[in-house]
Length: 251
Ligand SMILES: [Zn+2]
Image (cartoon, protein in one colour):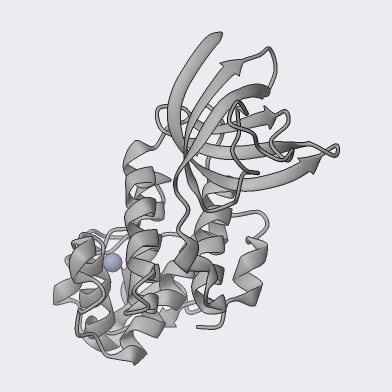
């Protein structure tokens, strides 16, 4: 599909190209991932400039671009809508934001729009700014990623025999990659992680929790941390190479 497009997009990565230009990877509304050449974006801006400043990762822009043959398209104009400056003020918060950008970049392919996930990412970044409930917010975001990428396990039924997990006695409740939760009759001993109903109930509720309620949600830290282990292991399992940012994250 050739032509000129006007959209909004979140910048996932920027690469300097020559003295004055950048190549920008954007998660764009209606388009999914697009790679754009922004000629002159690093030049000092004048009123007439197409770009008022170099593109920043983790920022949200109005973007006009022209599709070219091949994978690299041409950004013709852009304006910053929201810079999410607060994300950069604290390292743990910035690392969480970086993980989100990395996951979007790694799990999704060009021409595969995920507008709901894009909207949730913006909401996540806004809520991260308050500095409250950072770990709970991160878990909630991993649910959104799992849903959008079709990797979400069932929080209700055993992945082997479909029996309701709520009826499986705690000692028989097992989590195993990649499928998710099982009763102990359905899996081998190898590679299983024991889970309990407190964790399962948290994950089940979290998978559809309203974003605005996440920061003040009363969940014991230990449960949130185990939730992170389960959710991040599900996502890492499906990535050939886990995102670099995962290495730097301190739970
Ligand atoms: Zn079973």
